[in-house]
Image (cartoon, rainbow, N blue to C red):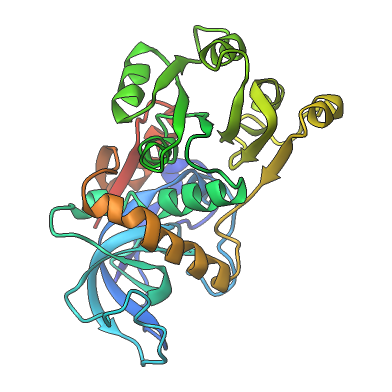
Length: 331
């Protein structure tokens, strides 16, 4: 089969399509013919040599796919987490530890989701990583309906899913985006209020929108560069959840602010979690988030679709900062 490999760490141009061995499913696994693969910032880090695949995963990138089941591995009882057993021909979207940029992948059935008939493969492939990230981090923050959530980067791959999902969960959703057009798009996704982080005093705007109270939860992709503002925007007992480091990994933390607000700072990753934790997260997604996809309440924004041969261009576009939603690769 063909896969998009990284012969040596470097810029986007190092990606190339090569022949690699076909995968073989083991107990509790599905062999999937990939119709589409989501592109994530973790893939950019892996290509640059900063985020290698975990042990046991293929060495090429790709954390989420959609396609058709080709075969089911030996039955150990794990291949039917959603009730009905999987069968060849079933449409599937799945979370991976790596290897999604390929014509075939092996995925644990516990990390797979059944794709509804009206959802294109390119859209389905844009969902598993974002849904798992959002659901697991809202759980980590003990977020509940009627609380206020601020999504930093509401037009990104995770943010564009977090906005409609959190609104469907009953939260009041505020979000940031860069530029008037992106602000309007994020509001159309379901944000109650969206702010242009390029043109406004964000802290002042968020405090004004919350009548000076601040927000209960911040979902942050910026890291160090957003730390001070994020703390300033938290309400008493607020929770800052850091899920990305787009603006650095080291910053000074004012513990006085943290103590005065009884606030919490939470940091999480998804890819490196043990298999049992990932299975639990996807069970949560399957129960609480996926029905909103099936009924159309939550759908991803697909910015662009590229063939495998243009994977380098897909990476360059994501690196440009101009992407709204997700970039997807197809064989």
